[in-house]
Image (cartoon, rainbow, N blue to C red):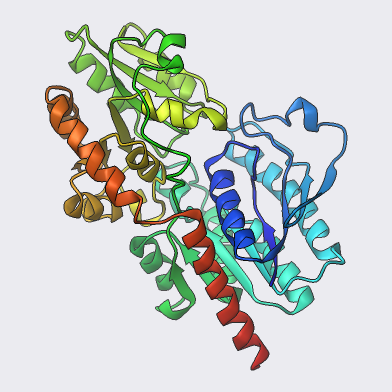
Length: 412
């Protein structure tokens, strides 16, 4: 089957959505599908196109399983929602032109959100070829930005909400990461759950594997011999990382414990100001994707905080990579959400309520005070995640969905 994929990021870009879509594409290719990926030129690390990719706005390259066409992403200041929307609009327009002008005829089109505007590119490309359109939703927009208070203009909210419903209604299938997200999308389809499919993100447990804690990452950033409590990922507004600073203050008397915030994002500057004078906190910039197994291995305990109300819009996929690395996680997220349910069934870490700072600190303290318990949680999590979802299995599920939709289309 021929699959056209329209995604915001793709290998070698280091964004989480790029890692996920690269894995899905890998699984589809291994299953024998031919792909054409339309994506951005790599820019995520520094919010500007990487030097080796500059010079042309459209750069196609043939690969063993098909073609990748990378286009100018028009990166804008991350802290300005209006400027980011303008950049997304430019990228979406260019990606739409490339996808629709493609002489290679797909059997199905898969588009990823965010940005939600890429759904328009997917719908237009699928409509032009009269093939099924699958909308892969990683975060539900505009719900996330409304919950965070980043989008308050009523007209803008109404516009994006209308666009969201327009795209859901025209997709042959909407894929989401959890049952919470599925219920959210179905409510916007007047309760029609049949068009919504839950296909979780994968974890490549053959790449993310248990490794020694004492490694070059620790040596480079002065962490040797310490008990490391780490948050690794986007330093944005969806993550209440002030809780990490508060936990570091509460454990400031522990000379053996250091908190590491590994990553970059729009909220980092303010977070660093908040951490001024807190000597047991280290900020480390985003690391190359090839280094992630080492980064995950360097921590004794990993942290996964998500703001209250966001579990119905988003799932922190880093949780599964942490388990693959054989490390325990302390999760702060809405009670009853997907990750709470996992940790109720699989003792691979501790879960507390969203933005429950006292519970968060107690959970961290209990794991660093009992390293044997923490190590056993890591082993349990690793065993579970290796059976949960691989790139091949997720690619197979998408392949089955594509076959179902193309068969239905053929029957009229």
